[in-house]
Length: 102
Image 1 (spheres, rainbow, N blue to C red):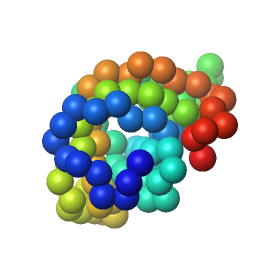
Image 2 (image 1 turned 45 degrees about the horizontal axis):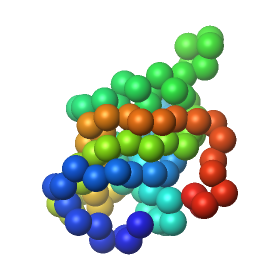
Image 3 (image 1 turned 60 degrees about the horizontal axis):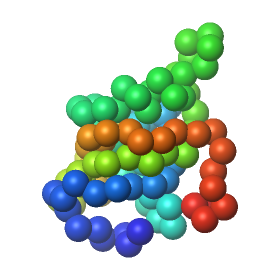
């Protein structure tokens, strides 16, 4: 995926979702810069996928989802992300990463 993607259009995204203290971020396959993940939409499905059986929410997963990208700006915790993505519908999550997504 290009570093400057089209914004506002519902699109299929593939990549890695990372959740940690004050961090909700998504890095598309092939990209180097993560995007902030909006707390609106279907983000609950991603949070559930990184929650351990003991209830600890932390980690990284591979995911595929439909979502909409914001315009460039200062997004997420302390405005450190250039884009924010809203997850409309999670299609797949896995702790295994396909070989074509690095």
